[in-house]
Length: 115
Length: 287
Image (cartoon, rainbow over all chains, first blue to last red; front, side, top):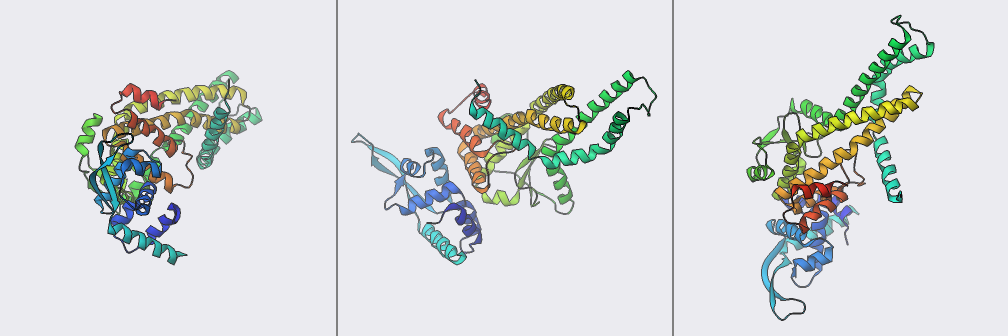
């Protein structure tokens, strides 16, 4: 797994993705969120991501807004079951886009080249 | 009872103060010529200059030292504050004109903060400007171009909010700084009663002044964070600070700025209280 410090160098060295995207994803928390989403097999909602990356849900929400704007994350509202209740709760379900896979592929390639 | 963490914090603050060794060196060089003359006067024990009674000479020396202190403090304040950035910008801008631009929600942010501000922000490519800052003399807000590109629009607005809050409290800050300067001079005079070697006295005096002024400057940052976060988005401001924290090799702050993790911790308080009053914010920002 690429850690943030090496990722920072890799992203700086990358030429493949556009500059705007590279700058936006070059953030420690966004990096963790993206990794979390990519490793998950199903769409995750904010609370789940917040727990996984150990950040406040409001902060995660902000980062998801930014990532959605650059097209790395796709968010749509869906229903999920709340704990201890049979009623469904509307949540913002986030999943990675094909662009994110491309970005991570580029990171992996750049990281290998740097080694 | 004195807690161990207090001692650690104090030692850390002293360490940070002495990291300003360059400033101390420059001050010593500037002061060495007039002080040399004075020292000669003391060492030789003669009253060569004025042929005045000793009591009068002592009064003159005391007045002179007070002036020196004010000068030293002025230099120190300018050096740790804005002089570097302003001079660097002035030299750079003679060849490269800064771009002036407005952020999308500038008017709303300024209105929320409660001041009148209609200037555009100045975007510079000056490599020595690595973080946004406010020129408190002209009221211009400067953004490094490289940094502006890195952040999302909302994050740039949060930075702008932080800087505008500095302008809002600029006058109050100047008053506080003057009060602190006065207090520092009084303390320095007291210190002078115990320090017999002039150079040691001056070094200790500088360090003391920095120790006194540091909490005030750091408190201003907390206040600007709080106010900026309220007017824009605390999430965006935290995001910016987290970025800087990750990029910095060591996060132990400076004389003027608290460590990023402390600022983030304070800003997170905004998540728990949606509309805190100003008194609340100041209560939380003051330790």
